[in-house]
Structure formats: structure tokens, C-alpha cells
Image (cartoon, rainbow, N blue to C red):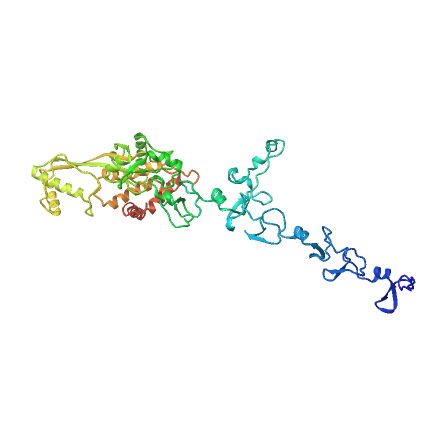
Length: 540
């Protein structure tokens, strides 16, 4: 009889008890009480079955996917937390999500990029959704929505993305005044991959002049504080970018501030030209910001000149005769006339040349015997036609009373004879100085006009104060120092106003001062730095 239910075993099958050979159990009790339990239904397992999940027996009907209930007998299964899953359901439920944001699990052939895994065929351009030719892509940062996907509304509708405003109805966009105004959310960005075409259209740095995308080409960077900056292939990270074609064309750099001139501003700059030494005309470039403050009348330039004189007098240029400021005639002229007056020519792609010229005249007046007068004039002209380095001076000197005598003596003898003649009691001779006018390039910005007039005021100040003839480097360096002081050099600027003594924005003044301090010129650059050091040694 069955040891568990006491049923007769004469007419049925039975199973010997595992721990007592003299006892037996009927088939029903064996399946219910003694057989291993199925991992699916929990009933005893007898007969044909499946062993899986670390030795757990299953009825063939019970061994199926936990989610979709498809039979796993003879098929590949994936164990997860003690349960069997088919490969598809396991990927859908637990696998890493595709990096494209489609929500599907990643399996099979995958693409690894940007620290993410993508399904085959899902790694496409984040903007035009097209594939990457030859697998070549560019990494960019795109603004994201709340779910962390690239924000389409940040893209231009005509550049491969659909504007959110086009996808939403007018009624949905209508503002509900009964609801509180939503608080602005912080902007977030996510790394994304774009194709070269979209990168060139939407993200690549462009030439500041012609707006051509600078992708796969060499270019230079122009630092407004240091004129033409580095020219390596990478371009560095300072200043505006300019393609090599624009770099070689005249007029693409602002002659006033040194920044790049856009294509629109370039068209408006064509009215300012100068003849080049090599022939033809060169455009004098001017950006829109400088053109908006351009000085075009003599009256406006004269008013700025008087402001310059007053400002420089307040910072140390005192005791200037009226001839150095109030009596000076300021005239705006074109570039060719200015270059002719300065006995110079414009050169180079940006038509570099003089921006201002001070024209002066010195005469001798008095009484003296004719032979003594000739000796005095010879010595006087000798002192003014050469500077201390023996080079021709820039100033124009003349005398209307006598003609120059033919050279008869050495310079030393000529000077000695002149000094002897001046010491005679019957000789009364004095020097008269005239500032004819200050010529200025027409159309410069107010900041550039003020800096140029401050430089020319330095020449007027030295001339009116009857300073001795100075070497060119010394005189131009001192005059550049005048311009530097007018631009706020050496002065503290209130952070609240950011305005300086010349009324311009401090950022503009700072850029121009930086250009002066870094200028690589043996006369104007080095001369200015020497004058600035001398001022600092004097406690200025």
C-alpha cells in the first residue's frame, strides 16, 4: 500500500521511497510530495522535462519567456534574476538604450561613439538625420529638451531641422493668462554628432569678412589689439578668423580699430581709397562700428582737438601757448592729399599710411648787417635741416628775407660763425614759429580721430614750446605717448561707467592702447615704449 495515502498499489504504478526501500508511494503522491518542483508552476516534475537556470527543472510547457510566454524549449534563453527570458524581450527590458534616443535596446552589431552605443543604422547626423559618409562626423554641443535629446528648435528651419513653431498650432501656442507665468529653465547641452555639411552650415567658425565656413582650410586670426595675429593652421583661439583669400585682399581690416570688415561693411568702405606705391587703388577698410562714429566735418574735428588739448593739459601737458591748440586750423582731407603733404605713400593690402600731418613754418625776423645775416641764416638752417642723428627732419622751415648762401664751410664752422654773429651788439634777430594747420584723414572714427589729433597735438606742443630738434624716434615716441594718455593710459577707469576722459568706451580705448603697446615699428612702436618707460620713471 502507498506509504503516504494508504492507497492500494496492486493495480497502479508506484515509486520506492528514497530513504526506505521497504516503503513505496503511488504516482500521485510521488509527483505531489516527493518529485522536484517545476521552476514555472511549482508542481512536481516527472517524466520528460527541461533543466535550466542552474539546475532548476521545468515542465516543457512551463519553460517559456517570462514576458511574452513563448516556449524556450530548444531555443536560446537569457537568465535574469532567476527567470528565463527570450533574447528579444531581455534586450527590450534590460539592455542599454540606443544612443539615438529611439528607446530600443542595443544588441547585435553596434556603433560606439560619443561614449554611447548605437544600433546599426541609428548613428546618424543629429540635424539632417542622414548617415555619415565614410563614418566621418563632427562633435558639437546641442541644446536639449527635458528628456535630454538634441533640441530641434535651436536649429534653423532651412538647415535640415524642423522648427518647433511649425509643428505647433496657433491655439497651442496661445498664452493662458489665467495660469502663473512659467519660470525660465536653465539651458542644458548634450554632445551630439553632425555630418560635415551640417557642421559647416550651422556650427563652423566663419570668416569674419566673407562669412565662408572655415572647415578643412587654413586661416589666420586677427586680434584687434595686435593687428594681424598668428597665421598657423589651427588659428589659435584669440581674435577674429579670416580666410587666406580675404587676408590677401585690401580693405578687409578696419584702418581705425584693426578688426575685420564684413562683406556688407566692405561695400560701404569703397568710397575710401588711396593710391598704392605699386600702382592702382587700395581700399581703406572701415568696420560698421567705426563708420557709425566717423568724423566728416572740420568743425567736429576742431572740437575734438580742443577737447584733446584740454584733457592733455589736465594730465600734465601744461603751459602750452595758444598757438598749440586754440589757434590751430584742423582740416579733414583725403588719403592721397594727406600722403602727399607728409611726403609718404600708402602701401600694403590695407593701404597703411599717415593719418595725420602737422605742417609748421619757422622764420627769422630782425636786423643785422647783410654779411652777418647770411652767416646767421646759414647756421640757423643747418640746425633745423638735420636732427641729432644726421637725418633729414620732417618739419618744413623757410625764411623769406634772404636766399641761402652756397656752402662754403664745414657744419661745425658754420655753427660757430653763426653764434659769433648773433653775439654782436648790432644784431637783433628772433625766431618766429607758425603752425600752418593739422591735416587729418577724413572719415575716421571718433576714437581714431581723437588718438590721431592727440598725436598731432604732441607735435604742436613741442613746436610751440620751442623744443630743440629731436631725433625722429624720440619725437614720434613722445607724440604717441600723448595719444596713449588721451586713450586713458595710466588712468583708472570707474567700473560702473567704463567711460574714459575721451568719452569713448573703455573697451575701445583698451584695444587701441594694446595695439600701440605691441606695435612692431622701430620709430612709432619702440619710440612709444621708450617714452612710456621714461614717464614711469618720472612717477607718471
